Amino acid sequence: MSALPQYGKHLHPSEMMRAVVIDRYGGPEMLHEASVPRPVPTRGQVLVRTRFVGVNPKDVVVRKGKFQVATGKKFPLIIGHDIAGEVVEAGLGADLAEGDLVYGMINDFAGRAYAEYAAVDSQQLAKAPTSIELRVAAAVPLAAQTALQALRDDARVKPGQHVLINGASGGVGVFAVQIAKILGAQVTAVCSHRNVELVTELGADRVIDYTQTELVDLDERFDAIFDVFGNYRFDTLEQLLTPRGTYVHTIPSSRIFKDVARTFVRRKRAKLVIVKSRREQLDWLRQQIDAGSMRVVVDRSFPLDEAPEAHRYMETKRARGKVVLEVG
Ligand SMILES: NC(=O)c1ccc[n+]([C@@H]2O[C@H](COP(=O)([O-])OP(=O)(O)OC[C@H]3O[C@@H](n4cnc5c(N)ncnc54)[C@H](OP(=O)(O)O)[C@@H]3O)[C@@H](O)[C@H]2O)c1
Image (cartoon, rainbow, N blue to C red; front, side):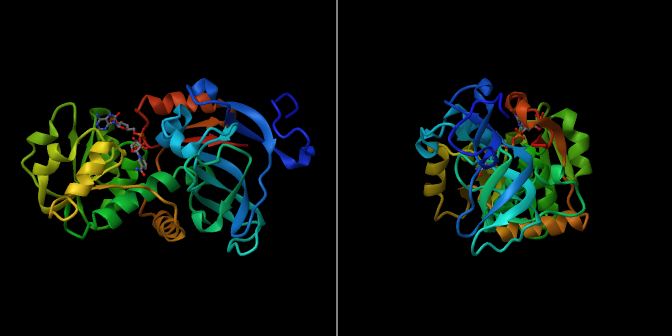
C-alpha cells in the first residue's frame, strides 16, 4: 500500500484502505489505485469488507462526469454501486450483524464501491444468496433490481401478458428475461445473432435478432415494452403497445421526461425506471436465485486494479451479462 498515492496522510495505516479513485472526470485512465481513509459506519449503517464489486454502465457515466450536478467536484471520488462482502462492523440501529455475508447496491449517485471497505445503509443490503459464489452475487444488485422495478413495479406485468425486452443479453437484460418469465409473461427478447442461444436458454419464448428484423415492422402487440438498451423512443414503439400497454425506458433524457409527463393520464404510458436498492427486492432476488429460478450470467471478472480495462470493456456495449471486479 505504501507505493500507492496517499490521501488523508495523517491517519494510522490501520485506518486506511486500498481503493480505486478518480482525481477528475474523464476516460478509463482516470481510474487509479490509492490509499484512502477507511469509512466509519454511522447510525443504520454497516461496514462491509468488500470482496467483489459489480461494474455497471452507470459507473462509466459517473466517471465521465456526465452527472456532475449530482456527483459534485469533490475529489478523490470513489465510484461504483454493487458490492458483495462481509459485514465487519454494525453501526447503531443497523439490522445486519458482524460476519453476515451480504450483497447490495449503494444508492448514492456516485457510489463508493471500488474499495476494500464501504459503509452502507443496512436497508440497501441483504443476506447474499448461498447457492452462488459471492463473486457472482456482486453482479446482481443494480441490474436485477432495475429489471424487477421496471417489470413488476412500473409495467405491472401480469401472468399471461406479452412482454418485449430490447437489449436482452446485457447486464439488465439477462435478468429482465428471467424476471418476466417468473412473473408469468410470454417473453419476446431482442439481441444480436451471437446472443440468441444465451437468451433462449434464459427462457425467452421468442428471440428477435435486431440485425435482421426492425422492431417497428412487428405485427404483434405487447402489454409491456422494456427498452433496456434505450435506443428507441416512445413514439417509435407506441404502435406496438396494447391499448393499456406500458413502455419503460432506462436512460434519462429531456425526451423521456416529456413522454412520461404527457402520457401520465393516457392509457398507453411511457415510464423511466430509476433504480433504488431496497431490502425487500434483494430478498426476493435471493429467493429466486437460491430456488434455482434465476441464473446469474457473469461475462468477465477483472482484479480491482484493472478497473480501467473493465470500463473499456463495458464501453464496447458488448458485455454478455455482467462484469465484476475482484477486490481480493
Ligand atoms: N435508469 C436506471 O435506473 C438504469 C439502471 C440500470 C441500467 N441503466 C441503463 O440501461 C442501459 C443498459 O444497461 P446494461 O447494464 O444492460 O448495459 P450493458 O450490459 O452494457 O448492455 C450490453 C448489451 O447491449 C446489447 N446491445 C448492444 N447494441 C444493441 C442494440 N442496438 N439493440 C439491442 N441490444 C444491443 C449487447 O448485445 P448484442 O451484442 O447482442 O448487441 C450487449 O449484450 C445502460 O444505458 C444503463 O446506463 C439504467
